[in-house]
Length: 107
Length: 179
Image (cartoon, helix red, strand yellow):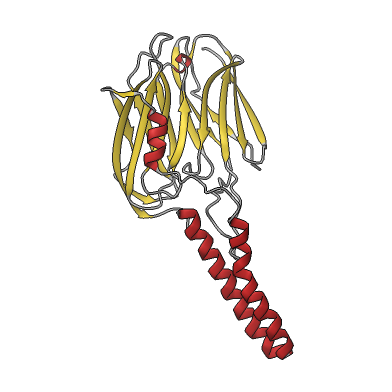
């Protein structure tokens, strides 16, 4: 998780729109199945939890498993009735957690 | 079973490399090293075996067992569940997909979760997504790994504990996760 994750939302949002929130983060998503050159297993390290909060309320979560690709892209929908802050949190097996925020304004 | 097989492979590789190393060292340093590295070669296979023995037998996770766990005793019912995934995936490392479940997404009736499973990946689970009525639409898009041609199964669960299931075969040209 070296580069900053991204949250992409539509540029214009009206009240009561259902928008698509697209998120992207850089992560190896090591499955735990692979071995290194010496034949030693490479320990599993994947982003296992994904949480999205809107106006401090949990609106969408995901438990990710090794079947999710590296650099996970996750898109979900959100019904926007009031402006507020969208907060997305990714946590990997090592306990490293990254939070990215995006302000949702109504036009 | 899978764990046991991969364990054995490690042992064999370990044994073989020690043996090769033994041969090289013998040429350089003579007979004493040979006996030493031979001892190493005979010890080596024992190490992972004894280390693995006391561990409780890991329960094998298959897509069938995962499906049973997710469905529990719930009822599979009719419903509209759309899985959008390529019929033929060029690159198994990243296969884009999206799922939409028809639901009013109100507090009284909404899709609670969506599970994605694969039938041939060594680890069958892709993800489990959990929705709330605030999502407005029960829709998710992501990318999955597919090791070979296989079926993708999606299971949606409504808040009334009804399950909707869909299954689709995806042909994979180049599988993911090469060692």
